[in-house]
Length: 71
Ligand SMILES: [Zn+2]
Image 1 (cartoon, rainbow, N blue to C red):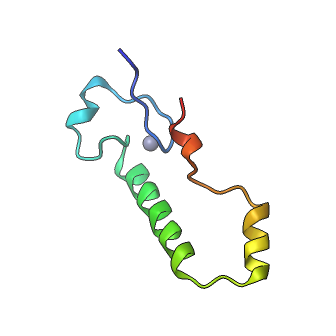
Image 2 (image 1 turned 135 degrees about the vertical axis):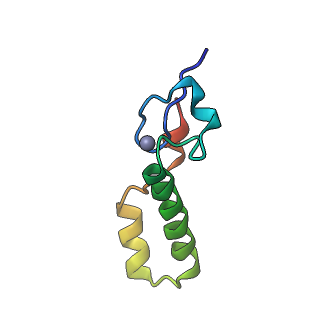
């Protein structure tokens, strides 16, 4: 059976984790981190971008990319 890990900190979760209120995260803290990522993503879309900001974003690796779930 595949080991379940927290998508935020990659800590291995116990078999009973699916019954936890914070599943699939290991803790409330990691759940909040995931929420924050979504919030920041929304802000990035809502805010108007000027050319200088776009250049900065292209030079910076995006946090919370799909690579986090690629295992
Ligand atoms: Zn975690």
